[in-house]
Image (cartoon, rainbow, N blue to C red; front, top):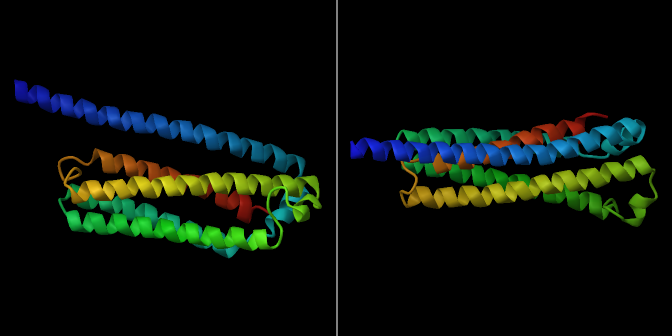
Length: 205
């Protein structure tokens, strides 16, 4: 009886962790959802200027980063599947690949931002302030929203790094992997947000 109660208690803890993570992810969706609404309103008011500003972004880099993040979501899923089958080394390898892919995403974003900054296109820059109001708003939203997303990528890398340590120390294993699932959910959120950012800034002209 006591053993059954202990199992039930563990199950409730796992369920509570999952619910807590979903609630946290919901607050993140509200944050970015509000930004998407702001973007939509300003785009409606400054349609032509948003279109002109959007044409200045590098679609190739945006597409490459999209492929990188989609691949990283797959490696996270496969890492969870591997640990559930008791394949610790494979799970760690796939999780490491996810972190490496995230790093490449940030490197691409760094070069993209650096290129824009080198041309004087950054918030409050003299070059940007010469442009029409709609273009100023576009690049302001671009830096704010992609910058906040990049911050989430960094946080996600840190979380997945801890998951990697937990797997190495057998804190996460075949019988206890809810932490890795939670980390995977956070990473999927990061990817989903980018899936919305990519067309808004790079494709809709």
